[in-house]
Amino acid sequence: MLGKTANGLFWMYRYFERAENTARLIETGQRIALTRLDAGDDEWVSVLQSAGALTDFEAEAEGNPVTRDEAVDWLLRSGANASSVLSCIEAARQNARLVRTALTGEVWEATNATYMTARRILARKVSERDLPETLRTIRQHAALVRGMTLGTMMRTEIFNFARIGTFLERADSTARILDVKYYVLLPSAGAVGTSIDNVQWETILRSVSARGGFRLEYGAAGGPLEIAEFLILNKRMPRSLAFCAETVRENLLHLQQDIPDPLPSLDLVDALLAECLSQDIGAVFDFGLHEFIETVLAHLARIARQIEIDFRFYE
Image (cartoon, rainbow, N blue to C red):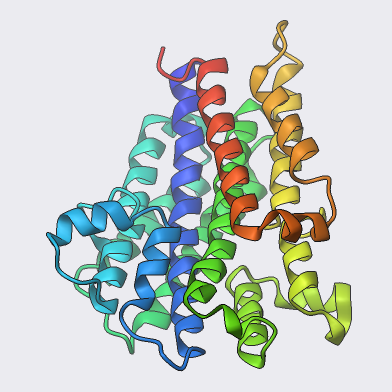
């Protein structure tokens, strides 16, 4: 496969996953803000920080304070934000056009439907009343593309690059959603262990569609430690860090079969699994949840850069 085709597939699916996950991040911030007695517009600084969007937002805002409406608009539809939901969906469709012959008709139609719907519902600022429905629509259309991919694509290297892009981005998102919890509680560490703390952890579960799976795994007794373990280390939960890393590894192993030289990116994934995702949750909290997440995000960034090099994306 040409490097440019691999690049287009990798980024098409990363962008779709990022659009969905940014919607999830907004929903997480919205729900957690409602649990805080002192919640205000400053709450959204933490969401922007976790999204990696605070610096660009502040530059665009030219010193004006962060408000909820402006933060949500920046994350949802701002053309100046390359990682906004609308920007990501537009970029995903552009990449899909570049690799059109590698996609099935069903995937292409789902991609276009997602693009047209996003353009329509994000044509203007989304009101607080309409925000839940807008976020739900974005998630549903992202799921449509994913479902068409799983249901119609041959399991070839085309599928491998789609999966690698999806699960690298998903791991990054789960880490950032967990980081929202850290940033939100930072000003009020005394809330740890209280009923508010438990509600916020429950919100994290909901934001990654993991509440049902968690209850099946732990029953009604699971608390914050078990939730963190579920989202970080559980290898059967499709949005956990461990599951995402294992899926990236499996797809790189499949690609390795046709390449005579070892893949450095595969070694980096193995290092992530060995150094971060093979320990128990107690060790994670002893190290510090925020510090652990920063370490994981750094690993993921190195893996993504190495994949670009290994498969000559820009040649």
